[in-house]
Length: 407
Ligand code: MLT
Image (cartoon, rainbow, N blue to C red; front, side):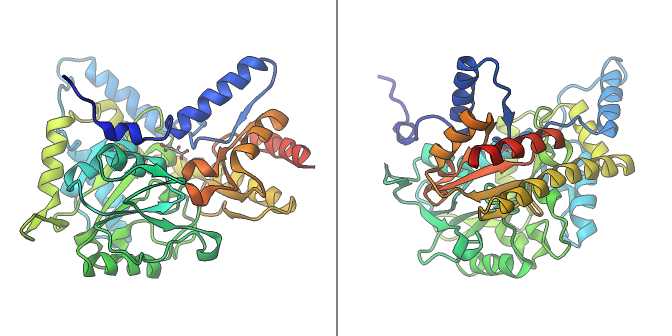
């Protein structure tokens, strides 16, 4: 008899963003004339940078000739892209990361979900609350948790991120093996200082733990004192893996390109306490389960690092930051507390009521989609998240409607 992986049965209903999409779809069906503005899922809306589409087109033209055609590429990504990433995203900021420590992939969601495969089922996991649901769900699927009760999975070390700690969790009392961190944070929009991040790096070193650092939103950092990469912190290469994406900085959510950094000295331990390097293991997994990102997409991603590409990506991000600024100031005028909106595309709002109730009210009264904070964890109850990914005109209109709905 074929038996299923029963850990899947512990998962809560559907994936948060699928659940929201279904609710919005049902609402639209029932109200076909209602104009809906989406400030829910963090999906970009503006066109790809011209430098990227130019590179995309010319790579496709190459593929149309026998001499320029490419079949399977290197699973880890083409050298031209890995070199450009290492130089521009790390070496230029004093972080000593080399091209062969970069693994190009089709998404930070997949990588941050898949990485847990490398670690034992009994690894103790520390996960922030609220949190991007992928970290938690993939560990539930892998059997690292007990059942769900009272808003939480048993067996997880939750790192509460609250107004009291400025949405930057403190070191846990219980000792974890694997620690998930994301800054600028999804969903709270909070940022972490270099000194705070160093506390985590030092803690991981002292406790033979490993940090999984999601930096998908680093492009939104405008405060130069804030770290964009965990490798800007001394010693992080031994104890941290970092996830990056072209989705939010260059509009690649539909194009699909991201990367994971696994430094050569980064290690975990075997049953006998022997040090095992992670790089060859992730490489083994990548080669076995992945055949690389398409050549034209990697050429388009490489173009993000051209002079024109850098300027165009900056301009995209600045546009979204202008939206975030507008949302934050309107929310403040309405007398609601919030975090984020600066160095981040997300605004985390104290809703003064149940967060799904707030979601339903905004959808029905204002035709605006937000993300209910409770969907990100127990500490998110009472909050909603607004995303700045839309046009300025739509954000202006959404804020007018929100104001009227809350009046
Ligand atoms: C979000 O809205 O939290 C993100 O868009 C989800 C993602 O990047 O997968």
